[in-house]
Amino acid sequence: MGTYAPYGYIKDPADHNHLLIDDKVAHVVREIFDLALTGNGLAKIRKHINKQHVLRPAAYAAERGETGYERHFEENEENRYIWSENSVRNILRSPIYAGNLAGYKRIAANMKSKKRLSKLPEECTDRQDTCFGA
Image (cartoon, rainbow, N blue to C red; front, side):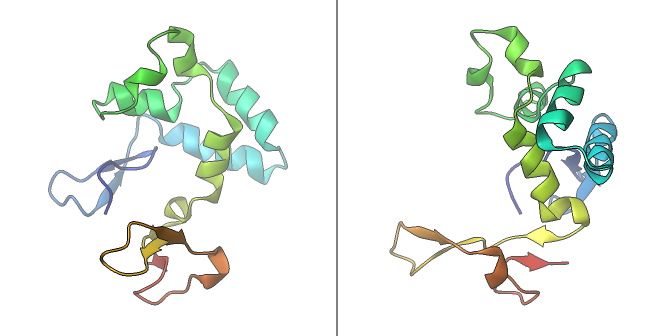
């Protein structure tokens, strides 16, 4: 549903609403989950990924040609390889990696409103008008 696929996925060229696993970085996502399952915290996971000198998600997106990311690395090329705890946290918390579609997380009160209120996770159900659907 989004413009770009999340880290670890690519959009299917035949169906832009379908995601395919990106084999180039899927091992990184799997490793993050494996490390978390063995009890490692965000800081340890981040340090482990940083030691491997893996492009962080924004740098990988810029490398794939997605716009809006390159400005983060203009001053320091090494920043392309420094993962933040937020990047690791976002991967671990995202329902997309569990096979769920996440949509309608921020809803406008009406069509004229520019304010978009975020829903809390407990407000999300499997119904169409809420956050998660298969």
